[in-house]
Image (cartoon, rainbow, N blue to C red; front, side, top):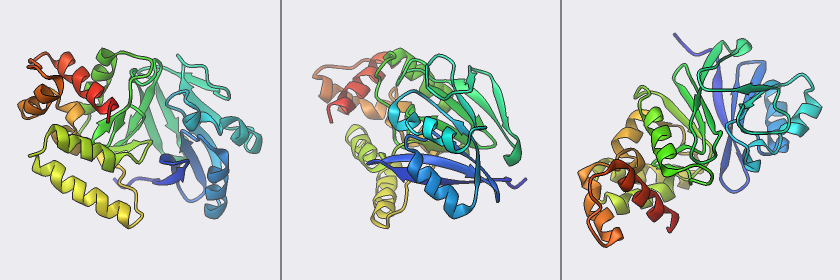
Length: 259
């Protein structure tokens, strides 16, 4: 069954993407860190903004909410119940289902702590809006949570169907692939993906969305137990990394933080 909506990126700041979900007349926006480019995009498409989906409280994801509500006072704003975000009208928790009626789109809320403690993602009809938890070929920094929380969150996302489109919030793909190839230099999928991503960026195109199947095959943060990563992890650590999944993931994330 064809989708009743389209999704387009709005590029803001240095490398953020806000995702506009729309049909011919109505629109919702994911993580509007800045109101001005959202308003400009709505004007060009002659769309009426109905609502906002927020994944977490960082300003580059929610800084435009209050201003957007001055232009659209009846906005519905979904946001994580465990985080205090000005302008939120409907706090959500794991398992909640929300329906964007005009778009014929129902999304399920997933709690994915790690980057922040209350971080949520929204999944439905083959689409995943995951904020700063999962990136193409990477994952978010662990600012408030623990490595165990982030690993569990990534495992939850990795369990989604292969064809699920990953609408993450930053254009980090090329740099993530550069790191992934340091961790797994002989992986042909990573080699091909890196060439593809560089060509896309050279043409001025976004590298997103990714897909869960590709992430599961290539993203080192979803494959930290893969023996193919062991030589690089041992070399970085200066001793055998062992087989414990949490230890291996933690070493990998620590290494990426230093790149």
